[in-house]
Image (cartoon, rainbow, N blue to C red; front, side):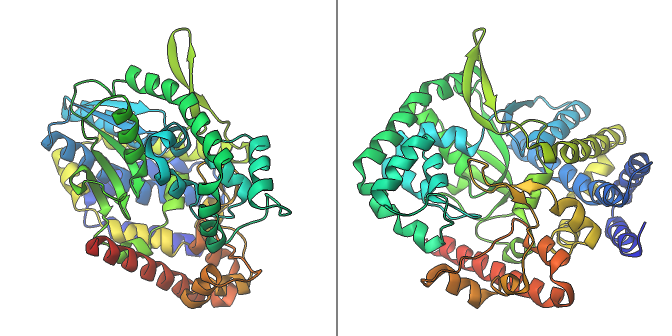
Length: 460
């Protein structure tokens, strides 16, 4: 093991010393995971056993405690981020003899937003005209559920003479909202596709018990709560008047008009945690806590039962995902085998911030190589995959500092921001001697963004 990697391992061990039972679980799991692996695999084993496993255990125990105190009898873990949370929760419910039923629900932003569109009117335009990594007009049409041919027709009406595949700036995306809202053909096509799949989606939800008179909650990674909002709209469209309640790893913000009492954040919440948010990487979190299957696209009926229609997993990600799942499953089994009240107490005292900040905001080169190579897309369609830690130039890193980035977003010009799903990983791999300078610039931008978002939430 390289010197830097040994340093990170010892740092994680030091942070777990205050919780010796958790440290024992990590050490046992790490020893079993290591044999015959290369450098990047060793980095993956270190992070999985000393950071991700303990964090997953802590979050899962918190979720079960919150649900039990609220009188929930069922928890739905949303695909795909909820896969490992679901596995951990099932083991814990068995060991703790809890009466909470854990279920895994096939879902995605795409699978729920398309059928939701016709229920929410103009608000759907916010979802379609949202920023992201390398957004194109064609991608915006896919967000609305249009076919490629239909998208091309709308492009000819809205943006004649321009390529559908050109990358759009945040300001260009916002400027399209008015023309799209006024385009009758676009509105009719989006409405048609929404109504077309609404019945299938509702049938799946009904089959899985979402319309049952049972107190339940949903569990997911979180971020801004739109999955819960979409589910609420879908159920209300079926005449179901109950309030959906959710438990999330973190919440940056909430949908407009949402009842705060129905959203529970573990690591950070909308009105607090700007420091933590600035040193957290949500896209990295999603890549790690994934499932062994692809994105849910829609629902189909086979042999009298509704099932998800799943996209295929990108071939380049298959081996990495399998390795990551194997490591986390190993940790879960060892943690369940060594479970005790003392271990549960230590999980509540875990130094979450130190562990996550060290890995996500200040990764070693080996960690950045291992996790940064995973292909990722932040769009609901999961198109235009790129390495999570994208390769950027020195100029592009400079544009991630607060003032240059603000200028690129708001001012007209030909230059577009080249973004990265995990900017801290990109900086570690490609910034060279300016690593510290560019990392600080990226953190300052994120802190300003989340502090402003936090202020807006409190003011609103």
